[in-house]
Length: 133
Image 1 (cartoon, rainbow, N blue to C red):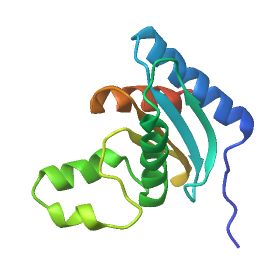
Image 2: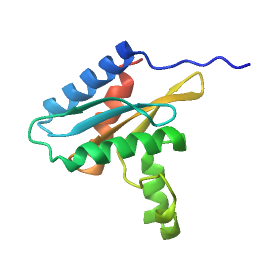
Image 3: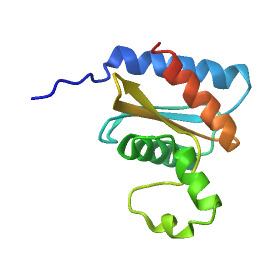
């Protein structure tokens, strides 16, 4: 039998606070979504001024990162590199801004951000993950 780490609500709160701080520091209106390792939502924070669709996109970025076990930038790079058939992959979004949370080599969840440019979304997501140390 295996034993694995899981995200606690304290972890999720720390991630949201750090990601929100990064977004606010840069005056970016984004939505931040945190999911567990199966891509199931744990928390969502839509900052003032962020378009409603970002709530859906941020969650899909987080889910794709969690179940894909990698940053969603890798999927976007695949598509941009010419593998357009990947766009038909089920349950995966090919947009940068989803970042997995890795503990002891295992993905325990992910964070997704949407609302600004792709690299800025990723910057906010990475700030959230970094809050866990």
